[in-house]
Image 1 (cartoon, rainbow, N blue to C red):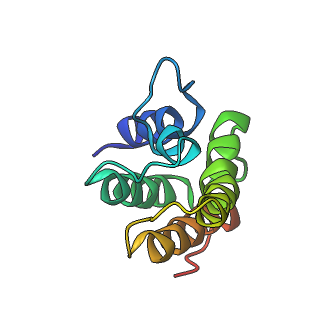
Image 2: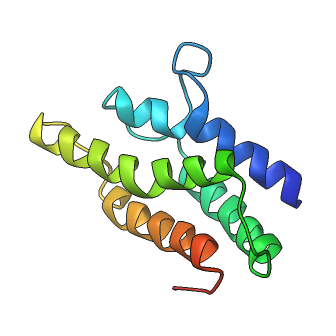
Length: 114
């Protein structure tokens, strides 16, 4: 996966509207549904590509920063809300959200938090 593909994938999985893209990562969580199989793996790969491409950049663009915030913060909030509402999440989703948050943090900080 190249940098532009990774950026487009992360933005689409977070900032796309649920009506236009009902199966994106965030849309699934907002609906109280688990991510599509392979979606988390693809997100983690895309985030790692973004980290490598951005680790020496002095600034981040607002769109990507918004997507990273949604991945690291809103996804965790949606997970907790789902738990309170009785959603049965996949057993590894909690750990996956932690990994996603760490990689997003790594991108923002410019150093691996891993």
